[in-house]
Image (cartoon, rainbow, N blue to C red; front, side, top):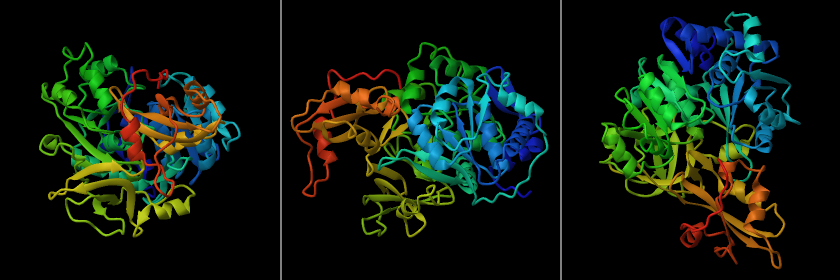
Length: 517
């Protein structure tokens, strides 16, 4: 085999997992041999469109077998997969298409208006429509039916780029994290080792795979080991509970909000969940009431810490330590290292707080076409600077104290205040603005904007919200806007966000409501 990357995985599983189901999606299922055949056909379709090693191929869509087929087909020919977040605006998606230089775009029919708006004035040349229902009549299926089924064995090295995944920018524009075939492979190995993924794993995919957590911690490790993925396009509690019982699901990953909604659903007490073996929760700590609801039925949660740049796992906390190490993000993954350093870059002993640095074969080497940002992201050339503050206890368990980058985690979505602040500053009448995260009972935390108007200007909360609609995804739009006389600043003029949180970080009795997410 010339191809040592992701594109070889399902081809190898064709024989190793013969007769075993790879994907279940509604009424449709694919055995590994069938999935391999479809991937080979799609690789030949893409090749016929001119895609080759290094070509960027974008996919805009929620969980769908075609998402995975496109990922593996791109890997088969050495092309680079660019998954796009369906919750972004056309403007945000257009930036990703232009920055990546993607020339091929695939999307389901239901998202075609969004895709076409996003692709305007972009490098996209070929646009392929996928059926909303898997295997339904569509341009995608007709192209696969007409394609040659021969397997392409293109030389792909572990160091070659596999995926460009855009992370919200701390300075305005998102950055494209270049995840290599090796990054995704070693992250999958870490997950298999630390979470005991087996060929009998049946993982229910409820979080969107365009997020690296769902793809890297759920889908890819399961397929590498020869297990089965049960795909759901979106999270709906009753459908999740029904699928757990129907398919004897063994593994579910999500954020605290999803697990809370399941435990509070009327079907929860009567659903047979005896097949469940592993629940993994990321984004933030599991509230005690949710933890108790699952422990009452004999289940515990595994947690962890990571980011797009670590593909995404950095640490993992086994369920057996959820009480003895409460508040911890766990131990470093098996083939990953973590250390804590002071501002001078010197490693700190256990118990002392500093910046969290991460190294390992799952860590990216660069951001797409951003050499300066890439260089600044690493210490000593190999340790990724997380921008987060924490400490290690005497046994090596990581505890996170704060986020240097002020990132807000809302319902599993990463939100960077700088991006929102930059959009608000475009509005006439705004002198300065700062965005902070505030507690929310449903989403964990949500953005709040604190705005200072220019002298003599009259600006309202409604004007600010209206300005952001269409510019930012709904989940990024602040749920509340506070109009202030001034922002607390240091002597050098930098906004003191710690002071800002003390003053404006509490609940507001009449918050602005942003419909949907």
